[in-house]
Image 1 (cartoon, rainbow, N blue to C red):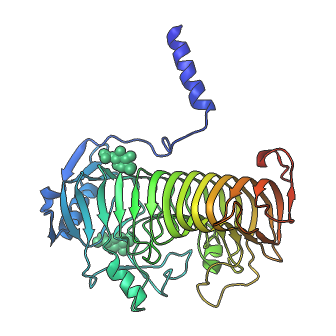
Image 2: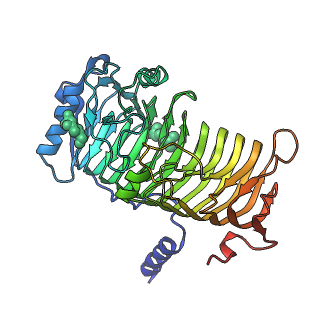
Image 3: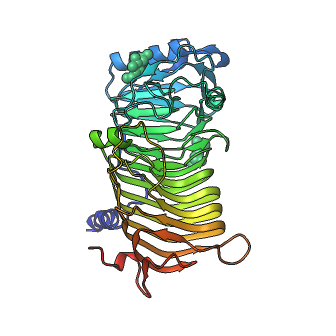
Length: 440
Ligand SMILES: *[C@@H]1O[C@H](CO)[C@@H](O)[C@H](O)[C@H]1NC(C)=O
Ligand SMILES: *[C@@H]1O[C@H](CO)[C@@H](O)[C@H](O)[C@H]1NC(C)=O
């Protein structure tokens, strides 16, 4: 009797409370087989090139299958290496003090095909350099450990970008393509050449307890960019980089529209960080659509824009059911920005009449101090943003208690307890919350 009561309360608690962590999105696997990079000749002296060791260890995991998969242990030390590919059913485990460091000899860096939803490399036409750590068509992969470091040594790449000598698009630090059941946790990501963590065409991805660091002036060092992916959960992490901390994407203009793969079921919670660009972003590449995003308990310091939903004419794509709540912003150029004129085009072949649709954006419980401009909502004339609901938002300015007013155009929706008051396009609600407003 007592026992069944106990189980009953367990189920009750599990079934009725909000899921507050990413647990359960990816099945937990206990690896029974462990190998060490040193078994394959790995040397952690910071100078020896370990490419062969990593590729052979992973070849062994791929070809000598063990029940439950294999853990590849990286002991303390600095393991310099060229890029390498992961395989299914493996854990890459970085011990405390382990550093996997990308080489700065770029002569052999492999090129791979552009993503079909982008039609070309993101920054240069043609192919793109493979990510430092890459997984294509894999499942059941874990990157974890005791907060060891994956160091992209990106400054050579940033300098090529600055000097305009890049031939192809820079590599991400970690990318998974067409993969599922991925966990990335308890790792430090440092100085990525380009975006840090890029799951694209993936499902069931968890990123938690990570630290992502890149200098404030490092170009395009986005933290985590879920791209045309579903069931992605990012939580309990510190991200401080030179570009958006988290940006949900889904392809670029005519290529993204043709590929038609949305991002949906994205949860972002308990993220702290700093950036000259956005804290939580949707876009600007959203041509496959972005739906059902929840971002909550976000703490942002010294920001460009706190919350940024960005798209453009020519993008197409439906951005729908985006909820952001409990966001604290300390020092920002802009608190909240939702705009339909952001981002560039892959080429001249985009269709300017492919207009994005933005509807069902709920932003609640935002508190900001030293915010230069509270907010900007700029819809499209021929595709106004609808069902935008703002509630319980206080954005304080630089000197006085209130920051300068919002600017809005081509938007409709509701506002409740927003200070400074957003704009006449949003109808005022004396009572209630966004949840209680009608949405039809
Ligand atoms: C790594 O994966 C990419 C993309 O799937 C592939 O083109 C490349 O040949 C692989 N590299 C190695 C060393 O296996
Ligand atoms: C690793 O870092 C995470 C996030 O900062 C922290 O929660 C965790 O306790 C650390 N783990 C270890 C083993 O140090």
